[in-house]
Length: 413
Image 1 (cartoon, rainbow, N blue to C red):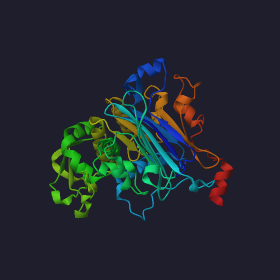
Image 2: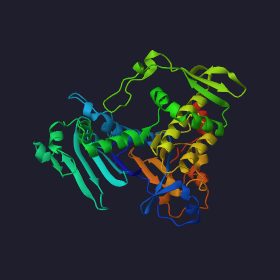
Image 3: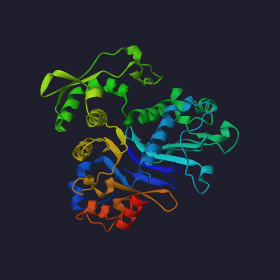
């Protein structure tokens, strides 16, 4: 599970923003009514879903993009070579391109809390730290500061948690995260952290390899979910494929898409006539295709208590389907979803707690600001949050001057 994410100097994110998935301290009747939207971790409650609202170009997508980039660094930085440039942009103004970008995540793995962070610029890692709470007290696993000296013993500081840690450090360049290299070199706690990001944080995408690997496992649940969502699809079949169409890296992760052999042969069968097949990619609507992939991703996340990141969840989906997806997560055991959306129908305090609603606003300096409805202490649970949002109470909407004069000037201009 994720408890907290902090980001600074990524894309339109300038100063540090905080996405907190720990439930706010509220004893209101509405919060108690929506207790199923959280799950227990020791003495606290953790949110199952978080929505991020904001105007176009305010930076909503950049929050998701920055998290995905940082996870990708953990997955793959051990493959980086001397010429690698990291695939992100720091904040463009006020000389922030010369300042480091920083990622921090507080998460729980095997019922133990961890804090992992790193900082970097476009060409090299600057710092990296891993702490944990094995006995409810914060303890260091390792720290790294590339500015602390020239030798590995000056740069790194270890406790006894990782086996032969300096062997890994000697094989870790400034292009590589230590945790990524240590996992590759078979160090236990590093492998656990690597697998947390690889297996738990799942980035939704229309990935056909994922479909092949998960479809057989979740087919029956997928069909049930589609039926609940008012689809008339009663069966789905994927034609046989060859195992050689896949290649795997050292962690048994598919790294080559099978699209090079042609479109994945998915066929659907409808209630009207179960004997007639439909070519999924050619004859089903964009909305049906999106629903298929989203539902398969969601079922996998919910069954395995993963964290799903989705940008603009409502794309090609009816607002009722989006509500259904969020309700699935809120009914799960401990799966989590972080999503951006413009769907104001979800802004309903009978369905979402105030601490589940975040807003993104672009400040005057062009930077992205992130804040929660929970921060508005004077906004009561009985108020209409959708109406207040559209009226600009929380800032995170576009302000459009659509006076008749402006419209006529634009048309006749």
